[in-house]
Image 1 (tube, rainbow, N blue to C red):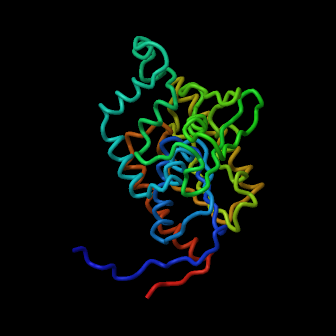
Image 2 (image 1 turned 30 degrees about the horizontal axis):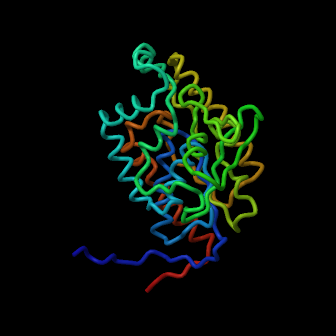
Image 3 (image 1 turned 45 degrees about the horizontal axis):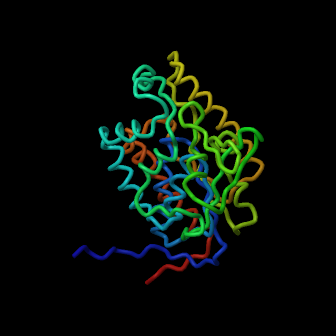
Length: 293
């Protein structure tokens, strides 16, 4: 049998509407959300609501479905370690002919269908409808024609999540009720606005960071496009966080990774591991704490 821990984690006394959790965009950098979720699990803190955009919506949907942070971590580590399996899933989700994928090359991938792709990568146990979730969830996408935010809190779960992560040029836009939707990070990379008035405190995780292209290098067309998006998202998130500062803002140090660096899952998780202790310390300082004997 495993040895008992030398000490008990602090247990947080809270009301049901105490803490809202906001998970931001960032592609593969969003794997840094997992140590934050693990910290909350270890503290025994259950957010009263989760809001997410792009990768934050994907991970938030799994977490709100009742899947633990540890289970999500194990699933994603296994998934991204299997390169052959990843390629099969990408091919199955492609839009267009196989020859299009080959001619485009790795530097300029063709569009993939987000709902097909993300359903293949998300862990088992994901709920099919917002009404089935263990924790209320708000998913932010961008309404392409209205040029503004589209927030989803009810109905089928996968279409809004796929829309929230529909990165322009990589993932096909999603149409819901006549609206054409793309990546939520276009309008709000860290959607604190989705939880305003929904909880006493807000914990937000920002993984936008700096563009990952090394200084002095001339980027490829795809690298330039993705880096430009990162730069714009960082500017947008900085301004929106200034306008609506969360009570706790966590910014894992993942600047050295690109938004498509899912094959570097272990390295990203290792680099972001220190935020677990930071979250524990700051959450216990913010909320009333009762340490179990």
